Length: 202
Image 1: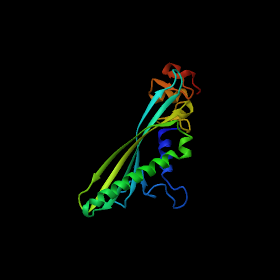
Image 2: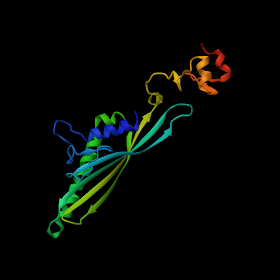
Image 3: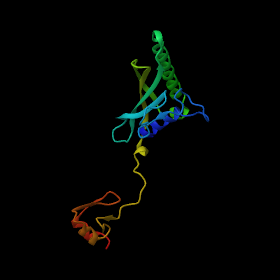
Image 4: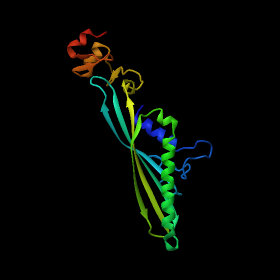
């Protein structure tokens, strides 16, 4: 498991539980970096991003980490201004409502909780803009999600071994010499010098 994978599970928790059935008032307007709307859109909306990561070693000499992924969720709502400042009261109610919806969606995601150990902290900050004919408000909800990483999470990606360097076959003495390098790391991790070139298969 990795931090981007955990982030994906949080996004999935905010997605539909059934066709056209969403856990928050934002509906399908849940965005991650790369697909954020470039123009002001309909409210409410939720914007999410992975903002940080911290690893704490679990044992010396082993690839074991307790990792914390920092995930930021920003929910934004709007309400038309009205006399006696009722719009502000209504937008505050909307903001608390969507905050609660986000928390319930995340806390009840079975897929997420099968992959993590705990959510260590949840921090919320509110902002309001009462200028103009429309009140705008937003909440920034930061989640610190803790999970476990072991050696298998650090396996190198699958791929074909590199046989050529600068157009030369490094598996032959001639090719190795023509590379102009003084050392070479083989597929099995051995470090060879130019003095070893004669021992390579020609």
